[in-house]
Image (tube, rainbow, N blue to C red):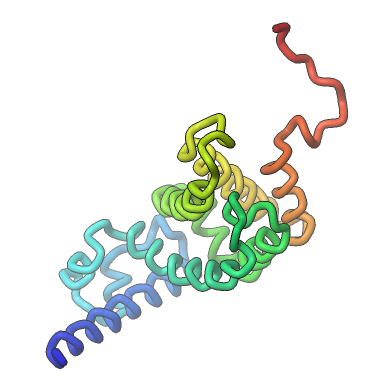
Length: 205
């Protein structure tokens, strides 16, 4: 047993936990754009050099790491519902409902992160995270069932879902999570043509 290695590992986990908790607390207190590295390290009672040792990518990297812990917990709840779903849970309304309920329960945090101009890098990381899970599910499909590249479809679905969540938060959640889940699923599975009841003008040929 490597006792020294275990001590270092525990120290690393404690340090990162302190930094994650510091940035989440600060994000809920003030604008993300105005938060400085010094404020984060002061709140965590650590040195600036320690911050950059663990998060060379700066604030976006730290904030996404703090969020990823929450996402991973959500994914663990969703995994039993996602088994065998080739769209990463999108064909099961319950998985989408849990996603919107999770966002609603953490609305203040997500609103700050997804609608703040300075947090665009974090939003991009969230989109990539969602796309990665969808991509893994889509890989189970036989190539003959796909008419466009997997990465295009995965990023489209992830981007559309994230855009809808962002709009929902910006407008103070005008529809309940259950209804948003139904809207989101219909749009993802049917597209705009599937939810418009008026005749569409299509090109000839």
